[in-house]
Length: 272
Ligand code: KIV
Image (cartoon, rainbow, N blue to C red; front, side, top):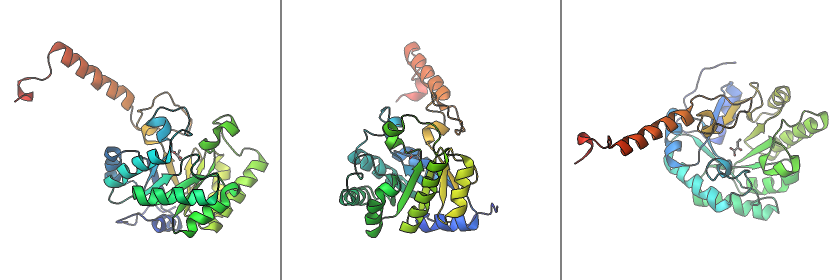
């Protein structure tokens, strides 16, 4: 597989499909705020996902279910203000698209109009086909999400690997093919066997972005706070930590507290 990188001034949904065709892997991470998005975009990330994982990471909820559409719009508009180059994908939160296609379209339109995001992501396959169709018909690019879909955690009961059994693997493949046929521009596959993820990526022509889905897919996504080690009690096998910010930040905060307590901060040069 070629590692030669074509220069993209701005990443669009079309660039991602080109990247797959050219064998260039797609890099994607989450962002929920201006400052982090600015760093990530400057570093050259291809896609920023304003994930509903903000519900866990930003708000401290146990699941992604409580985050609201208004909160997602707030996070997404902060991210959009920061970026120059990358594509911004915004999650439709739980409860904003499951009841009927009209509601799904209204929610997607609110995200596009009020946040300035470039596309939306939603979880599920056949069950939400009509909603996906309606959103796509309005000209809004859609990224699918199959495998472990955290908005359905109470149906699954656990965050364990999905689609290990043949029947579920077959459904996942059929859903991925359906998403491509409908016109989605990419699909996230979360926590599925690497062999199955490869089969999906080889079968459909739109990019497959994996998280816990092995290396034979078209790109990778991680939750930024996990990969930089700000969250430190989460140790899934698929997670590579690039920093241990929990440790480094705790050290810095302890030094500050101590400097304030001892009167070492501020010194003469740090005052007017
Ligand atoms: O919300 C999120 O962060 C996600 C990724 C885990 C893919 O959906």
